[in-house]
Image (cartoon, rainbow, N blue to C red):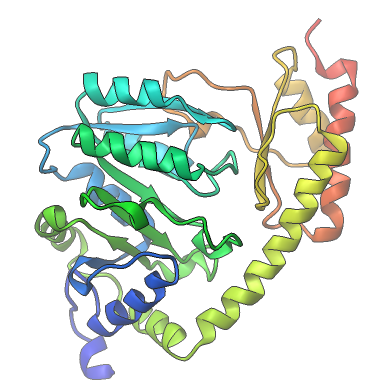
Length: 338
């Protein structure tokens, strides 16, 4: 492929990879045309481009779940883009509040992770997804669907929002960083026809094209079956860790709010009296490293008392031990305000 790969590509991406990606997307119930698929330099680039570019509804404010993906929150803050939040918990979002925001605010698009939300670990049910789509169509709001953990779905009936989008309002993002490796820097964006031209223009002025070498590597990986083989292997490893995490939470932290999903990250809701500084220090001394939830929120938005749990890089045999230590720390009076 040297005649093609050693020259500039196109803003849309390398055509052989787009054709192969179309087949892959169908496995996730994402049926689309080649012209709607863009290869991006990771999902982060797609997030940046759609956040900056104008939309056909001529609106400017971005609505995001709170909490949400920390790097996207960083992007919105860094670029100083107009953004507001809507609270999301284990129980989902308040659909009445969502309609109120769609009706009263100048919402360009709603960024959401319907499946295995980061950092909560929860997913929307079918009725919630149908309601979100109905409201988006009613109020002419686009939906930015980040399906970054699609490869770890074990329920074949749990389709993405895109699968039921008949009004061309959903932008679907697919990442490869969790199932392969982040350094590949390749992602997929499936766009409504109405924003293809402007997205291509913005992408062209940003980087001309995404790395042709990375695109060729991903194409060969998909074409020869290595991706499917690796997907099965990696998802089985993560699923084992996820089941242990879920069971450990049930065994040791059942009185706290947590996600009912079996996924390698979850959360528990903490009592207001917990002294987070003392609590985190105590667990650090026990070899349990916790990340603050503050970076998952927009500035000024109310922070829930949430403890993020992630075992994607934890050996399976140590997960239960870690949850036991967290439960023990929550029983220690020294970790509470008087």
